[in-house]
Amino acid sequence: MAEQIFINNSLPLKERYEDLIPQLKALVSGEDDMVANAANICAALKETFGWLWIGFYFVKNTEAARQLVLGPFQGPVACTRIDFNKGVCGTAWANRETLIVDNVDLFPGHIACNSLSRSEIVVPVIQHNSVIAVLDIDSHKLSAFTETDAHYLEKIVNLLTDGLR
Ligand code: SME
Image 1 (cartoon, rainbow, N blue to C red):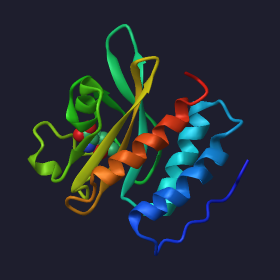
Image 2 (image 1 turned 30 degrees about the vertical axis):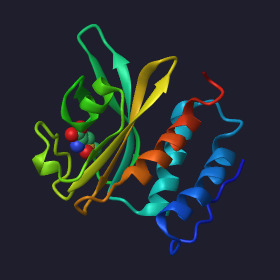
Image 3 (image 1 turned 120 degrees about the horizontal axis):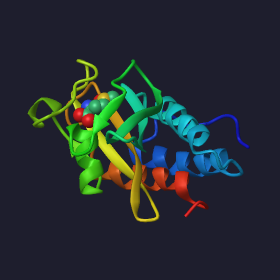
């Protein structure tokens, strides 16, 4: 297993993703524990892009509710549970698609875990046709995320379920 990520932080965004993805593949290959792999993916994304907050929420079923529950993350402490269809994360879960929010203050029902967050992207993790988790990323800049991020982050979350499908 690779234990270090080497990225030239002066490369343009697309090239940084292109450099990162094979390294992430090597990092998660041979490890089938999803929490361990999610933790390393967060650390690698933080090291590569430096965003404010990067983390996974996992879908958990209790007798009372189906919720997203906080998993591995990098950044400031965050809210631990999010209901289906609530906030940006719960909406991406319900819609089963990546959601980019250019200005979180303009998103109805946005859940503010950190007052420094200005924009956000949430990417669902899908296994056997069900959303099993979401990757949530916050930036302290407005409009920090584009379709390029969506494209590559979708490839990155697929690494979590590749081989487990
Ligand atoms: N803003 C998210 C909540 C999670 S934090 O950003 C870490 C939301 O509205 O779902």
